Amino acid sequence: MKSYIVKSVLAVAVVAMAASCKPEFDKVTPTKGSADFTRYIALGNSLTSGFADGGLYLEGQQNSFPGMIAEQMKLVGGGSFATPYFSAAQANGTGYVKLTGFTATGSPVITKETSNLAVTGQTTVPGVGAVTLYAKYTGDINNYGVPGVKLVHAMFPGYASVNGLYERLLTGAYGTNNTTYLEFATTKPYTFFSMWLGNNDILGYASAGGDGAANAPTTKTTFASTYAAVVAKLVEKGAKGVVATIPDVLTTPYFRTVTLATLKAAVPAAPAFYIKTSTGATRAATDADLFTLTLSSDNVIGGTSPLGPYGLAPTNPIESKYVLDPDEIAVVKDFVAAYNATIRSVASANGLALFDAYTVLNEYSAGKKVNGVTVSAAYIRGNLFSLDGIHLTPMGYALVANEFIKSINAKYGSSIPSVDVSKYRGVKYP
Image (cartoon, rainbow, N blue to C red; front, side, top):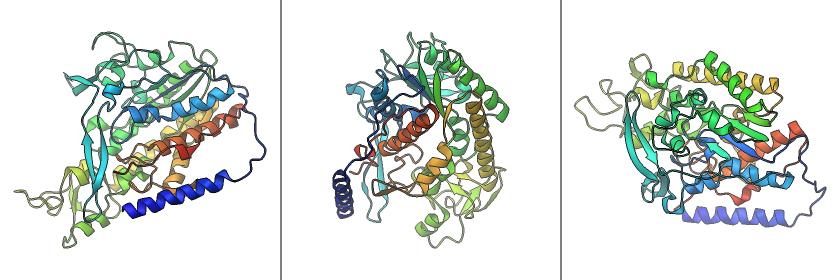
């Protein structure tokens, strides 16, 4: 493995040297076009915040795509851009997972980072459960990305009480500030915005294997009316902006790493693997089922139990929360398509730039050359997605930043320079 990594690094270095020797032609002077980037704000969820490897931590925050975009905007009149960073002493934020090695069979060893956290306590909210609280952030904010926020939470007054990563941004003690997310993000004047909300309105359902009423997707009508209302608020004073469609979660490593084939390879003597479907029925798994990445870490196939070996006996099937059956897959596809139709329609009606994240991220997931190196949705070695299988690596966020910039330039006639993707890492090896 070390030899492979060294060879890969050398290959990248050779490509970089070759690129540096090429003459530059047709230099373009950066211009702002018809947009004003004086104060840029970013609204969104975990993808906007820089969340990676199953957590929000300082390095991830420092590599958020809005921060990268803001740096490039400075070349066309953009102003300062503040992100609510965790302090150096609490740099590991919520905690995250990291790659610490490989087993003798080549399986990755993933461990949790639990030191230098920003956690200050925990409270229990009836009907919600445990809510973790974090050290307060004080200071300017331009990146309003909050992990966990759904579109339908944007105008919910009590949202800070159920999301500690939003609560840490507000003044006052826990439970005393009912400022809505949308109100908080738009209180201070701004001239340009990016908005990437809506992912979590279906992601919760998909990542939980379609299990449980608490993870039900936001209804299509509610999504449509709320999205229109949020955008109306963002543009009401003349600001221009860019919005993005919902990515295809089904093509991420979260659903493409653990497969029926890998299960058979792990337990070749097993005649069948049993799952519990969305209807509560038990049946043998097929290639049409999608397993979650968490199955590999939470459970051991064949583990002993009075009910029979886990996943190998119909009396002890793989739980529904670890698998999307074809009916559940159809639900995810249907809702993502409907949400994206709304996003495109509202963007067009308001004259906004649109980044088609669904299409672009699927292209990268299938495998695409970047500076001579292929990135893909392959777990770990693909370098596009981080260790949680859903959120991006710094390299992945840089690619997204460039796609946002392309969309902004095309819509507003600006010429914001692209981000140098070679400056950002993929998955960090031990």
